[in-house]
Image (cartoon, rainbow, N blue to C red; front, side, top):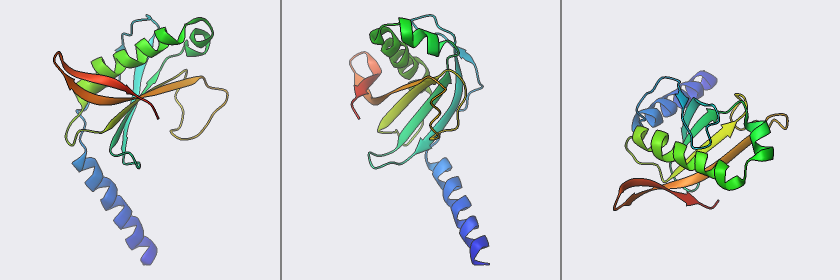
Amino acid sequence: MILRLSSFAVALSVLAFSAAAELTPVDAQDVTVPSGQPVAFYETLMDRPAMGLTARFRFVAPELGLRIKTMPYEALEADLSALCESYALPRLGEPMPSIIVISLSERPTEFGAPDPEVAQVFEAYRPAETDAGAACEWEAF
């Protein structure tokens, strides 16, 4: 009985959190990035680590393993920044997360499970308001 109540409490907590931190739903789709590499939206995760509400937008870039070897980091970061500003920001709801993490991997992976066989990169950004409107500011972590 205690195990069932505990499971029920966890399920309610997850539902309450999901309702409190809404994202605008979208269908999986291909996205355009400055480098021209093929990128597709994979999933969005919301959590509350020590730094506050975090929105994680995960993308699959099948050529990432090859591109990492030939692309300068600045070009790769431009792709990540573009995904934050053109894809993530328009889909955020309330409450606004304090951090947005954009990740690319060459194939889908389980979140939080390291896989040394899969090329992965990620960057963190802070949503900010500028004179030009909403923007993603790079965040060191």
